[in-house]
Length: 517
Image (tube, rainbow, N blue to C red; front, top):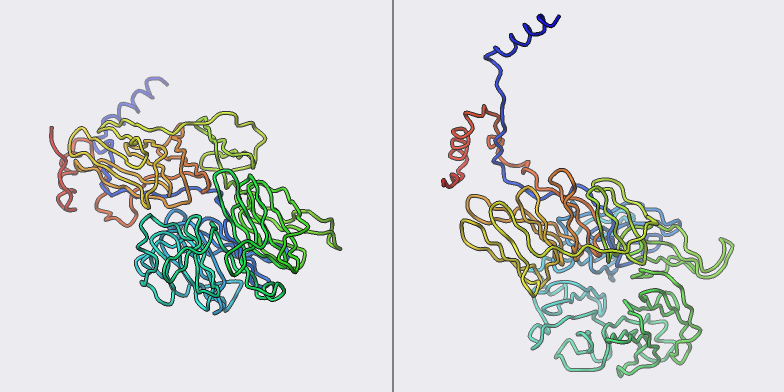
């Protein structure tokens, strides 16, 4: 038996037709998100029986009765579209959506359960980086950084020449014309003159202003130690206000009540005929960012915790002060650790266990430690380091010119990681990946998401990278061959033919030949 086996093996070893092969793949790489979970639900808009909810770069269309998702709107795959920073329903019965610092899109609501993209204004069209939208004075205003503008007059920028870098809030129409907040000031859009103090303004519905006998606005004034919320009259003086130590994210009239969205709770007041805030109600909820009225006594609440329906008072449907149809998702992360197979990340809103590349679930595991961001990495071809101010990345190759990069929109860099001889960079607006190719530092690709991306983890095996964003969720990404590249850039050849085959492939594809030592 042994002799027979030896004979067979000997015959196989003499087969001159067999030879090991190796793959030469010269296709350029692109960065591709393989898996993603979570994000922040920042803006809630109610349109009759439909609840429109921003969720990172996605719009969820939700049934206002039961809280079930009907459909979603995604302009592109995750990582290619910035997160939504604001949404507003306008007088033309269209939904306007601001994708942070990038574009504004109008959606047609002929079928309110399935909105369709109707028109897009890019940042170049607008002349400003869009953050906030305001439907007032018969038009839609766009504000944020660089100035204020109207969608019906794109490219005409107002207040773009202020001496300090501005940060504009919402626009409100008043008896003196449109006004806007700039940090802690209320200024006139027409000429920039100072009118009062507020960090954000929202209009009061006409019915409430009529009951008060005067024009009114909701305001929030944020300070280093305290935040104030209340009503402001036509002279930009307070009608009534309350001050709290916690952060007030936003405030507005919902139904017939004033609602303030705070760090750890919702606070709501009835407004009496004198414009006073009376009968406050405190609703504990961590991670809320917006609230909307679905129907009498039922409110949509959404934020970093996920989303839910809130029943304010007891009725035939059940007890009062109760959250229904709750959907939890990771949206606020302040700590993260990994064992190479899983990531445990979260905050006081809850901890999440993510099996890298797989499922994610709420966890009762304690999260008592944190992973500091990596500021310097070394690769076979060079080194990379984050600068002292976290605004620049410096890459120094062993051969070739040094390279410097800064994040968009004056952002900051938080961490570095390496995979497959590439540098991964986590910053305020996502991830950037760089490679050393043909003796030059080149961008491999990028991932757009709400940041900051403060953690990048290399799993135990493979070339994927796990990412964790403070407000953008978590997932995995990888630099993969561009599927649109020329297929002739991939060949399987015998090892002894590899050098000549690669040289011929480079020449045929118009690629530079590698430098020789």
